Length: 68
Image (tube, rainbow, N blue to C red; front, side):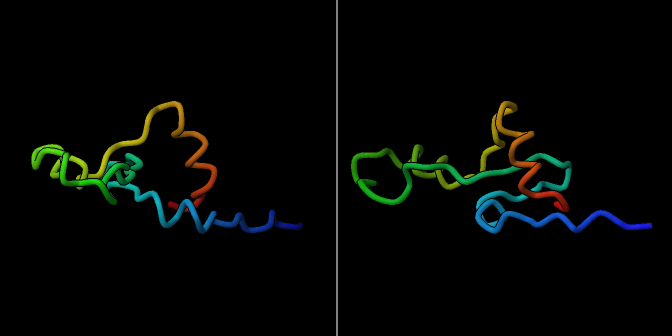
């Protein structure tokens, strides 16, 4: 009896997304790399925190991370 081949984890997705302890897929926020002077300190702090990906993208990202 032949087994199915192993599925590969997408290396780009593995770098960009992390699975939380409760199973949510976390992502980094954009707009944090440059032109920071005009952004408020509150906004810069918020941009440093991870965010949960949208429900519409969740199924697509889970396919890229089969063993996460």
